Amino acid sequence: MAEVISGKELSLKKRDFMKNQVEMLENKYGRKPHLAVILVGDDPGSVSYVTGKEKACNEIGITNTTIKKPNDITQEELLEIIEELNNNKSVDGILVQLPLPKHINQTFIINSIRPDKDVDGFHPVNVASLYLKQPGIIPCTPKGIMEVLDSVNISIEGKRAVVIGRSNIVGLPVSKLMLDRNATITIAHSRTKDLASVTKEADILIAAVGKPLFVKRDMVKEGAVVIDVGVNRNPETGKLCGDVDFNDVLDKVSYITKVPGGIGPMTITCLMENTIECFIKHVEN
Ligand code: NAP
Image (cartoon, rainbow, N blue to C red; front, side, top):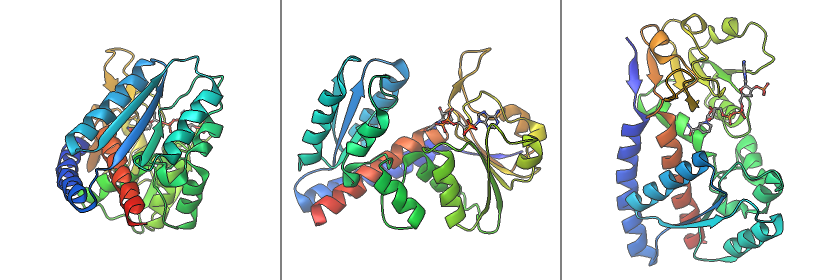
């Protein structure tokens, strides 16, 4: 039977540590790290993610400003808000909750955030830093996945790792992080032929597909480590579920993360870490 790696428990430990760290930083520098989040519209998913981020900030003691704007905000108005936050010395991290309404150019907005305040790590400067192995901000979900693997001492070097998904926010950056740790990486996607034959090769399988219960028992290798990034609604029960059919694979794999309580909480925890890292760079430079 697999060991279930709890991202929730790991998050609690890390948040406890960060709470003390923030206290020490405040004593040393006279202020706390400050995260500004911009939420456009009232999409329930986005509202719930932003609430989770506020809660984590409050737990850790990070100053948190949420700027809520209606769906019909213009791109120019949004850019003005970002410009103000870019220039505000008391703000360390800026996050624009995605997705944005269709009339706003998402890429343009992301590119307008100062790279040293881009706590999501989506700005091209931070993306390039990751690919060139230079210091920069690492996107939260891939960072959280690596921390989850390290929390149970999974050895990565020399392992065959398969990532299902090639998005800019999960699949590609986590593949690069795994490659940097000397895994042999295969990135699978919607045009991959005979996906099961590819995923069955994986010592470490990372599913970032966005399809409920997509990964079944016949797609995993005996003893594999399975990281489930997906956040979906189970079409039958309406409950949250991952990309992996947890119950189907549980007794075949060695480690697995659960949804909810796996990568989700670690993503928010890594956002807090990124905010603290940005703060330290700002106060020390
Ligand atoms: P995305 O941008 O929609 O990318 C999905 C990827 O899956 C694409 O590369 C797509 O291939 C691939 N794919 C789709 N159908 C496939 C199939 N039948 N076989 C093989 N590959 C297939 O999604 P994302 O933003 O990376 O997110 C993925 C999942 O992770 C979602 O459920 C999302 O909600 C979740 N997520 C969770 C967190 C967290 O904090 N836990 C954070 C971010 C995302 P193509 O490129 O060929 O289209």
